[in-house]
Image 1 (cartoon, rainbow, N blue to C red):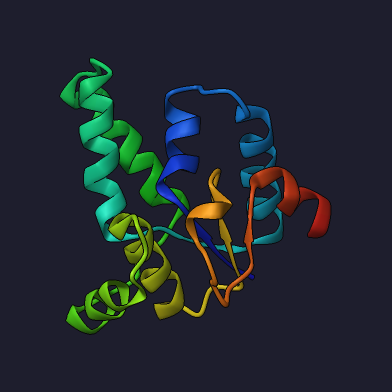
Image 2 (spheres, helix red, strand yellow):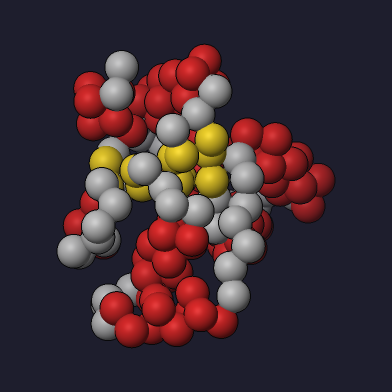
Length: 136
């Protein structure tokens, strides 16, 4: 299964935010089933920036990104994907870019903490808890 992981899920892990137990269980299940995890290129810079604001050192931030990249692949996207995202007319362009990247890899599902940020998506959008319930 191709599983596209939104930035906020990785942030739940590295910042140990609420709901982390579901995220950890989701990641363990995907690893056990050899699901393909995918993450958008721009998620890496967003995560680095947010971790910096959380006062993590450059070494800590780099380690988190290396850990993420050991678990997840990054799709090649281009200006066509960016134009598609712009054409969606979504309130949050970053979410539109996430969706465009998920479409690029023909993801079977998008995992996010904010399903409402993907209005009208043709790819199922689930929280980690919903994924665990629907894809045990």
